[in-house]
Length: 229
Image (cartoon, rainbow, N blue to C red):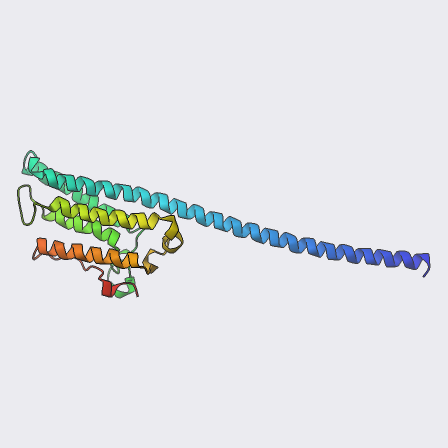
């Protein structure tokens, strides 16, 4: 092999090495880029979850405050200056509770929407989750409340406190980082003992409310037998 052939062979060998190295660098670069893209998507998902958590916590704080104020109103309603003041304050609280229910639908959509209320608007199909039931049962209790006495009125505040405890428990579960992967964006798919217990509590409160306000027509509640399939 003369010098020319040797140089030609060396150049070809070098080009081959460079090509292999270039291919290796390209593969490594692609893997790094893929990993970075995956990491960025994970960070974006986490930011979205944090944003949802912050918004739902703001809603939850407003709901807890409204229930606490409603319970105190029940305890002190006989101290209202007159019937007009009582009715005005009650109306304001009813509006606050009603709007909180609808605002809560942004974070806690109805369960099993395909099984109930097909004739209704999308947000109102299905069964309310227990966390919103707590607000609705309080709404109905307050709606039936009178300034002095009234049917089963002496322990209205205690009943509302029970509703608040249900709401707080469900909100805490919703925000618990140990359950985040199961709950954020997938609340209506959750299958757990916690969900069944919340439904049981909500049904018990509904039964108690019906016994307190006989003859009043309440919206259908989600029972344990109707629970998520």
